Length: 98
Image (cartoon, rainbow, N blue to C red; front, side, top):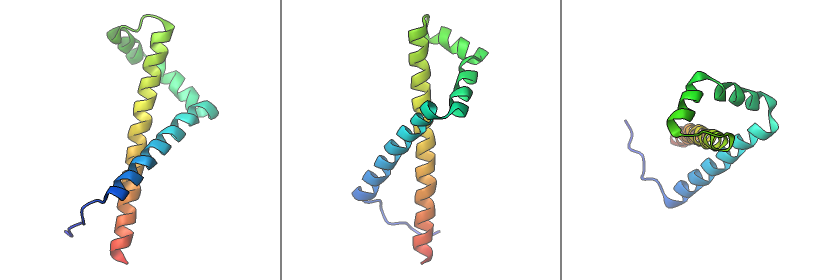
């Protein structure tokens, strides 16, 4: 195992910005991709989501929409974190092999 140097402030800021940008882009894909929007609609209509609506006390359409948006934002953020971490590890591996 090789010891990696501690992360720099610049690297952390760059990774944070990348996560924010990717999260926004993933969320925009809902707006511009019928496939992604359709998948979210299908998931939001499942029994699990209906139970989640009841559990969260989302009784009207506005509260249900708010819950869906929060879930989409969370999933997009987690996906962006995963993409940034994989990219960071690939870049680090490439640099260490050079």
